[in-house]
Amino acid sequence: MSGTHSRTGPGRDHPGERAAEDPIRLLAIRDTPLSVDEVFAAVGDAAAGGTALFVGTVRSHDGGADVDGLGYSAHPTAEEEMRRIAEKVVADYPVRALAAVHRVGDLAIGDLAVVVAVSCPHRGEAFDACRKLIDDLKHEVPIWKHQTFSDGTEEWVGA
Image 1: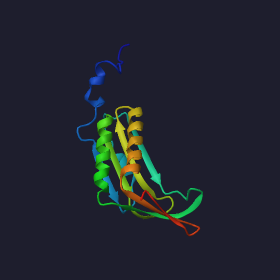
Image 2: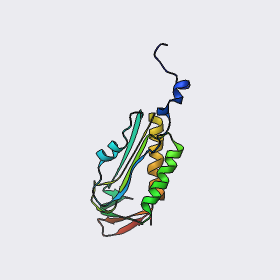
Image 3: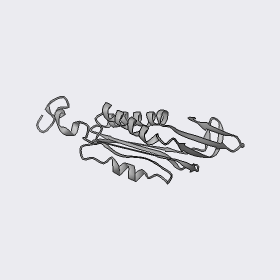
Image 4: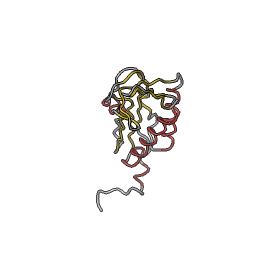
């Protein structure tokens, strides 16, 4: 076929098919509202054919109970852990660009708690890398959630 490129042929050696030299564009823990637009813009890359973005929001319920609000607290090493996780994702996937921000402080129902995005040469890689990034951030970064429930009870999560 004229004008087509094989995914297994010489085109796979193109620099755009590989990870970028410095793909970690934005990592932060903030006590101010997060911006989906900022994170999305940070992962823009002309060689990326797929961008996956995840937005975590404060929901109104957890474990069958109504949530009134919550607060996030972070250990002083939390950003270092975010970087370690981001570097592992970059090592395991052909990441063109990566960004992650997490909120700390008191949040209301509907507020953005975390926004992560990854761009890669292809959509499948972007989905997989983004899922790995958010899952590992949630399980390994020392950020703790304190939930208050409408019945007056409270709970620490991740502590």
